[in-house]
Length: 179
Image (cartoon, rainbow, N blue to C red; front, top):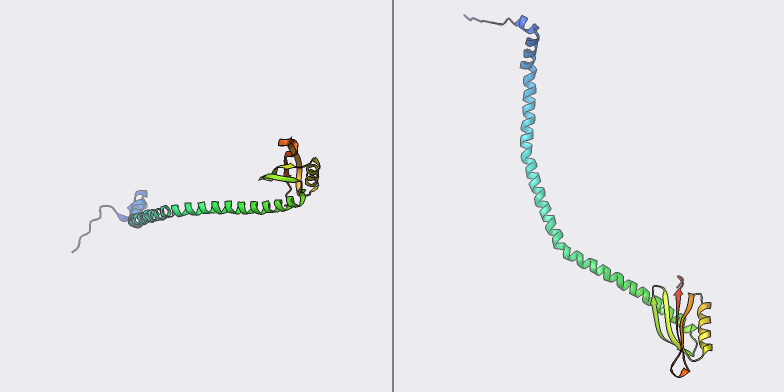
């Protein structure tokens, strides 16, 4: 024979608010607690994976830093070479324009004018020379001003040379962009 003793009657207990809460806590509450525990355990175990991923990333960054440090010398060499190539190209362009200027001057300079020095600096042409006669110097200046290759021709200095037979001069002119 089996004997059951129930100190709290079930029907009356389930009708009270405390009874309803305990009934809900004992049925659905345990599912919520089990779900929460599963989420906590997943977070705990995922921590190991994330720690390993972080360690791998630190190692990868260290390797990449070593590669960058090893290539730094090569990069500096390449940049230096690029700079030198740019300078060589600039010199080549200047040389080409210098050759054109000399060809133009060859056709403009009269026979009794001698150019001693020709300086070209950023589009400004400075000519130092001497002329046997004033007519030759005048003819040279007229040719320069009438040329469509030069602008703003200015005569800076004029002086008599030793013995009084030569006229020394210094003149500046600017190159037009069409060269």
